[in-house]
Length: 376
Image (cartoon, rainbow, N blue to C red):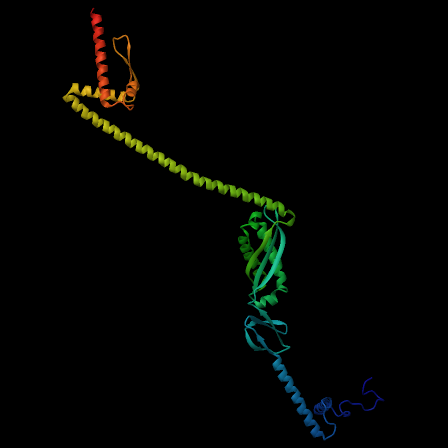
């Protein structure tokens, strides 16, 4: 029911002014001040002027207190390892708040702090298929920091979830392009580097504001169901490599020995060649000297050569059979008995010469007897 409806009397809320025009704002303000004075314990008595002055002073003090509180409310501290991002009425400002003491108007601005120096870690584990169609269980840790606070807070709703998805995609791409031996043995370091590069490219494309500092392959092994069989295969490969290394070591030890033996034979052959050449040269020189002597005295030199030859032959023989031309019998000379009857050693040069002279006389005698018989 309206206040100016007929039958309700004069209930004008603006001070029963009737049709005198618009309401008086000063009077309305005084009434509101009176109500505030009652709320904050103001006095009921007193004149109109004193009550109005007290209410105005109290209201100013309240406003001053609210202003001071509002000012302190807007102060905030950004630590050394943090950066602040300011949102004004929900819209992000392009400027980043650096470390230190700052002030922003509360309610109007909202500041979110992001630690940009803390190294955060995220683990990831999954079963993956390699290029040679084997299944491996890979466990890895991704270490990262926040590089761009604005992108980290604004561009992606949940950057950690995006990091998980990007890590899964990068790891599957790299493992799927590698064989099993590379993933579980000496290729783990190269795989970690490749995963880090691919993961960072994904995060930059998504504008997550994350910088990957390190990717570590904690463990890469076959599934537990086939791990025993795989260990047997690896042990067999290790034994194969060990045998190959032993064979190479044996070959490395044999080859130098064979080369040494070959060099030894070469040196011996060279020495024998030099010896034969030197001996031949010596014999040639000796023959030339003998030829000179033979030209001077043929009979003496011939006899000398003959005796030297007989001496050389007899010194190496124990028995001699002599066949005289024109004779009917063979002459047998038991040199070993001559030696035994002597001093027990080899026959001396004089004995040999005397024996040779005796043999020559015997031969000449037999030849002479044969001629006599023939003449008769």
